[in-house]
Image (cartoon, rainbow, N blue to C red; front, side):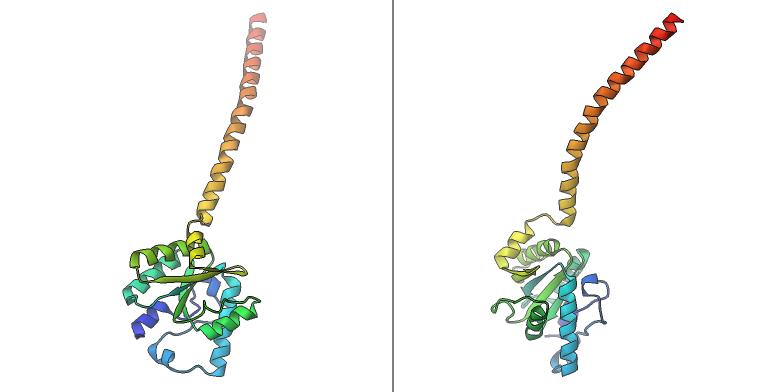
Length: 209
């Protein structure tokens, strides 16, 4: 993997992503990637994975092999727009992190080169990734962690078809507006009637005077 590709993918926490906020960030230079991690480095990365899992609303796993640096940089920008971060993960350490937060990853999921999108809104991240995979014909969706449940690639595709938070809120507001408008109309009728009665009584009093 080239240094440019490493920088495009990143390795963990980034300051602008609250779901990965914590003790600094991993540096994705080629030299760092090629060096074996010390025990202290492994424990630090493991702890960062744990913190990322605890903060994220969901994690989507992908096989990024075959993508160009510019494509990966574009993908990361798109994911940042939905408050998600796209990072290379070390499978063994990530599996341990999953166990530390009380979950169990499927044996066949955390295998091979993987990059994960840590997202506050997993639906929004799934939409970005599935569209990117469809357009690029290179990126492969492997699965996702949603709460305590792991889903496969088909599950991520289904997830991407659901409304995200903003869309869901808009639908809820729309559903509420219709009854409220009806209520206003219902209330407006008697109020208009009351005003007509008051106006008529006022006219009667004027004539009597």
